[in-house]
Length: 495
Image (tube, rainbow, N blue to C red; front, side):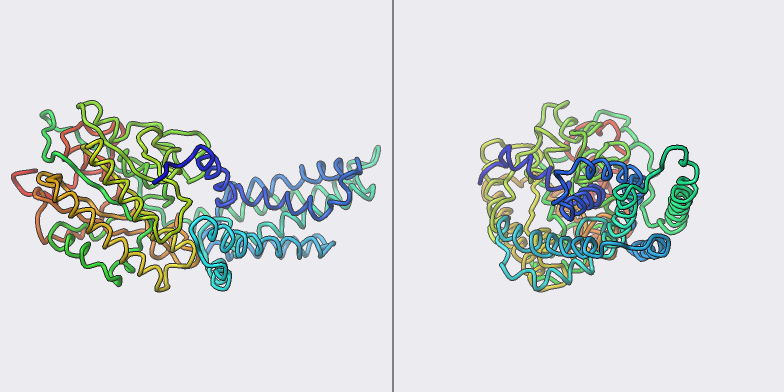
């Protein structure tokens, strides 16, 4: 299986600028505005009018970049748009029609059909389902139609209003700036202030579903850590929704769970993006400390120690097998895999690569990310049969991998940890703002040191992964670890 190429790594970062809602909105609005007036590009007056009007629209762009409106909050975005329509007559209706047309072309066909066909082999007819997923999607990505539409329509309305003023010579004349400002800038300034206050009140009173982030640092043991296991194998089934896992035909995983210890209330972190979740799992702390707050990583690398750093301190080795996105946070500890392959073979190829790593490098800790379930949720939705089938396929592949390791004696003194990094909501498998189906994830342990047939219903956070791995492998906790060691899953003599 190929590594992610340098081109793919850069392309993944560029794609995140279009996938994440915050950078998408200004990029999209600017592109639409310029395309609508492509015939005027040779006119110097066009660029001066465009630049001046863009400066006036900038406060709205900044507000909508700063404030997210996911889940039900997106419904409140239509009121500022209605107010804008009442204040400024919407001229050039073709501009708004172009914006709506390009948005649905980009999300439904270019992204949902063309892109997914080329990257993972989705059907050329995927648009027949994807348009419904885009309308349902509640997460703050570019694929959230009900959030993006009122945002870009309002910005275009204001930008176009001031552009027309400047283009027609209606800007402030000499000695008449105060009158012009009173007529145009004062109502606009009041609108911007009202929009900021409106957004602030909404977020202060309704944006209340984030998990608490008040855990203290993980207490250090009184004596030097002693290894419980020779190896730990962590398999993360990216994007596996907990309720759908229960419905799926996954006998092997469910047998491991029944024979081990399950944490039924394992909570992911916020925002529940893949790179954020992996960074929290393997540092043991929150995004505000490790610095990764989105899949769009502006400054590469985590700010704190990871479990891989901890293992190096005691002469042990860990490897993280995953897609190119994870390099942005974990750097050289990642054994990258290409995500450009048919989704039906992606997980199979990852498992084959995991076998090679175990045979050739023999790491003390292996973390393997399976991507097929997540990619199916994003491309075809989580509430369809294809999603359940992909979970069933992951179950068979994990069974094969475990049997392969058992035959080679790699699991004699090892713990298996099976989990997801986040769930997925309805729509295009959105995840980030903890909609229904995202917050709690499957999580269970299996092995000779693990208690059998135990269910632990106490709410726990995925930040417990790193200190638990350190405890099992006899390594110090990562520097900023705040998770708790999952000692209740271990036999009394092993605690």
